Length: 94
Image (cartoon, rainbow, N blue to C red; front, top):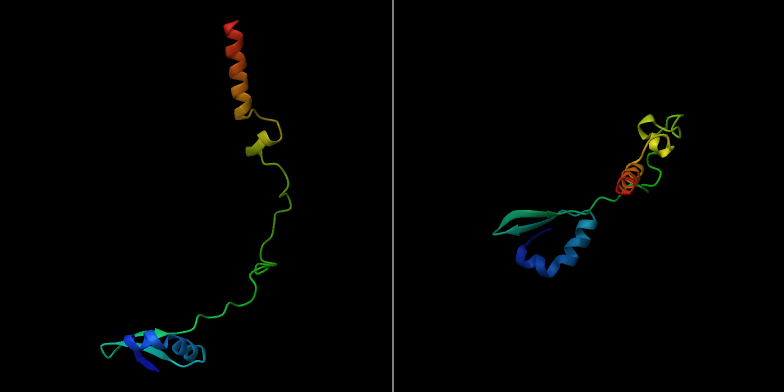
């Protein structure tokens, strides 16, 4: 099916149905093919579980990392440092 831009304005529903049925639908401007109307491809299945069996976790996944020792209380945190500095300022004023 070939239709002009002017015609396409009034026949859009028919053009969509034709494209969905597999017919080639072309819109022309000044007698030249300009645009082809095609259906959007259907998605293949559900995306949930699409990586099933492709992702693995290390056996020590739950083990604490040395770089994050402050989570275990073994290192001074930013808040600990501020509190220590505040305490030091308070003691030096007295």
